[in-house]
Length: 200
Image (cartoon, rainbow, N blue to C red; front, side, top):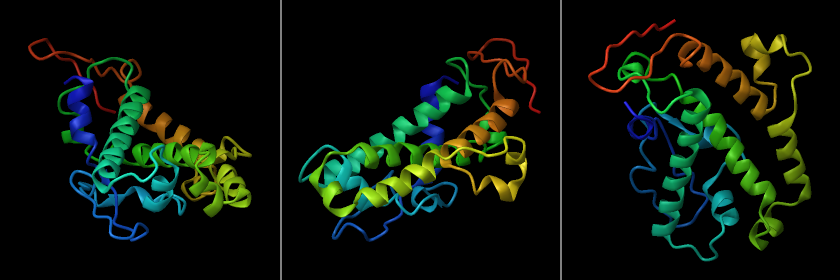
């Protein structure tokens, strides 16, 4: 399958939970759809609908436009993940049938990074008034702190004490070792061509 077909499959793996931070706002499909049962807000407490609404560019954004913004944000995150994981424009047709949860952690962490960067760089007065320098400084630390010991990252309990970007790199490396085009002989093909696929 091509990358755009893979996007359709993975973009509903995680969804947005109605966290009640935006009064009267109702999530619409596909934003409230989660095939995995996981939500973007679960990765970090700063990832809320209100924080996103306060930091996105449009002042007085309507509910319809905010739903569209969230959908586009999810699409862009998933496109980044696909680009980071796969080296070519094609993905083995049955890869997500065999491993449906393969990209869930990577998507969750990438969304956290992108939303955090939006919060930290926003010049909207809503963000500046509601989320002060101390909050932004703590968020920056949570996202970008490095691993003091690169070898210890492979210990499952230890990795959750790392910064989100370091965890993203760890999860990405893990997925690439399993699915990377050159790394594990997954041959990216179009339909009708001979196939030689190895899942490890």
